[in-house]
Image (cartoon, rainbow, N blue to C red; front, side, top):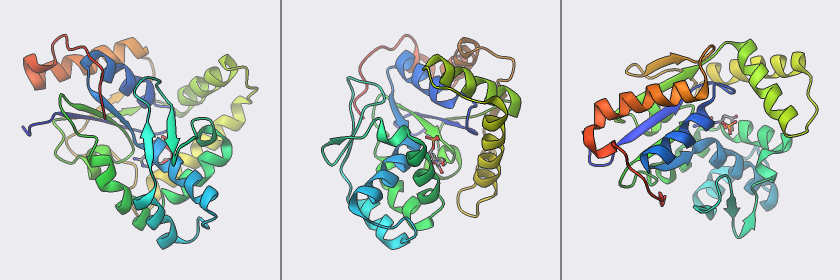
Length: 235
Ligand code: DC
């Protein structure tokens, strides 16, 4: 086992990766890498800099140069070159730009080392699409979360309604299906479980149950170093 333990959480949109990863990081006192947020920030960085998202080299240069900070005191807060972009990256435009830059090999390559630098003691929980296959292929524990398309659409629907945002279930279902196909069929870093990943179908599982199951696996793999850890991760 390498010095700094990593748990990778990959899976399709709506599989609960984000919520599971964040709970695990809290429980274990590990740092958290939300790699999707990095692709989102890169899309917004291109927009702000006037770089066309079709310009692969331009986007890759931005990926290498942009100054991104994740606030450790406020979950979800992201600062790009001094600007709080936490809301901008979550808009439809942010999602669209993210999926376009995420399909570029040069942009992915430029973000690789930045993602790997999050691997710091006492450990890291990394959430994304290619954490176990590409970014941390030597991770000690790899989880691939999945759930039925209908369940994932229902979860997204509930999230939006809870936030007071109107939503239409059949539209969400259709959008998820399109994104699933795009993510799993793209040539570069397609969405798929690593060969050594534990695949968990969360369709009928609560968030608590998923977190408990992964924590049990983490304690089995990492032993005492993860028992009852608390603390403020500093990525
Ligand atoms: O998980 P998310 O919706 O925040 O991800 C935003 C976009 O980035 C989405 O199009 C998938 C892509 N992505 C990726 O290609 N690889 C990752 N490791 C994480 C996200």
